[in-house]
Image (tube, rainbow, N blue to C red; front, side, top):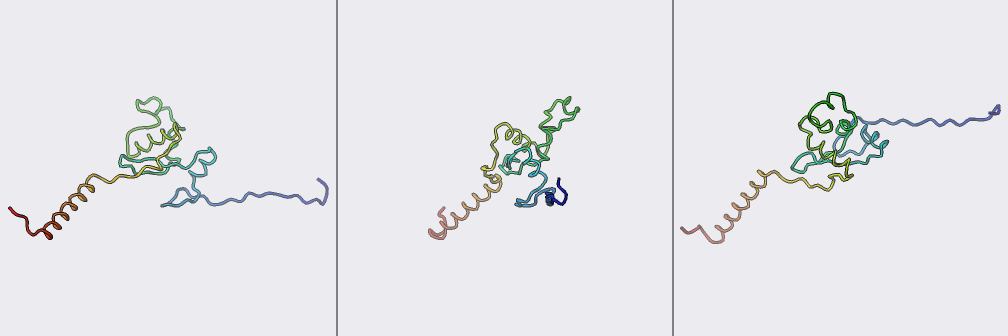
Length: 139
């Protein structure tokens, strides 16, 4: 370099990365940064049989890429692990890895008890309307 010549330095700008997202936030977090390096898109996974969904996170994804020797020797799948609260999400994550289709279009269904209560309330309302318009029921 010539004496007196100015050298241009590029200093990368660092920004804060959250350890997780809260609510419906779209801010960068650890999962979004790591998945962008691996070219993994944002995905939603079904987390239960009612159709509720959760976001694919690094915590759900790690058991598929980091398998310890104990998990290899056990009878259950190292990907699915022992059954627990996140079994459906892990199965859906594995299906997403194979197919590339997530559950973002899944609509959550209502619980059976809520549906039954609503239908019973509708029957009672219809009976009351019928009594008002026709008078008391004949027996």
